[in-house]
Length: 212
Image (tube, rainbow, N blue to C red):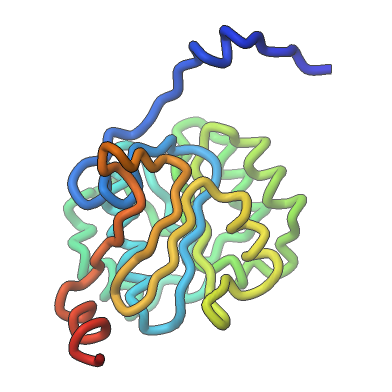
């Protein structure tokens, strides 16, 4: 049986949050960099560029591993990497080339392992089950797992991706080069969290304004 936590200790507990700023603060709030986030959207929506922007920004706070399950090391991934200026962050980010869940777990058990792991896309971890997801979070409670998902009819594609969305602290849907947020770290009166994030100004304008 686990130890019960007193009323006072609940109220006085301290949590480490990331001091986001600018557009990231307006959209994400000040999140804990642990648990799970979900980013989902359709093809051609700007999702890959947005994921890269998030990865680059998170290197200010943690070491990041981007597990490219769908593309692996490819020309299109390299172009997206270049587009956000990823070379500026040096060794604070690594690319995992279609790394399996088993191999990732081994990696995370080592000292100096990445603090943030991006899984792109969850549909390509074949056989990935709910128990795998919960065990990953339970076994590595200080890590942040960002799952990227395809979209179908405006929803994460598949039951597994939908279950991850319900469990995630930050849920982000990408459409027309804009990212739309639902975050548990929103403090509306301070303007922290929940604001739409523009991934690419011209693309978003063409999609949301010029196409009307």
